[in-house]
Length: 110
Image (cartoon, rainbow, N blue to C red; front, side, top):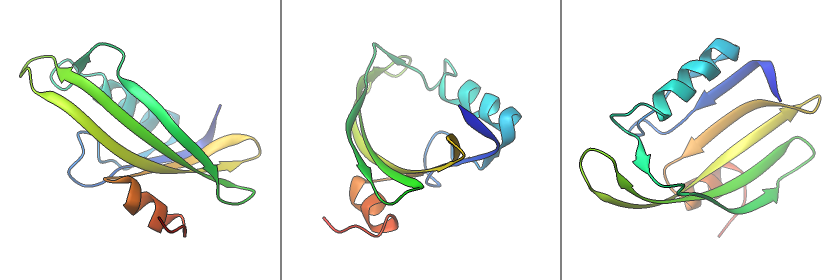
């Protein structure tokens, strides 16, 4: 599903800013986002929309509603990612703090 040269990068303040490169980086990213210190209770991740940008890129809009496991803080976060595909596999996933920032990065307007 992922290109051997995959790169995952998120905004600087995210729990997993990256960059994470290659399949080992993908594994490190997954360990980071599922770390018990930042994990959340329930199944909160929602796909709000996926918008084709061009033949190789998709804008994905996400929403997370959950309770942080250790702090009890209620979360309601929307963000976006630009996903690039090469030869049918994910080459990069770049996350942006807000959906508007992701739309701008994709060359789309609100």
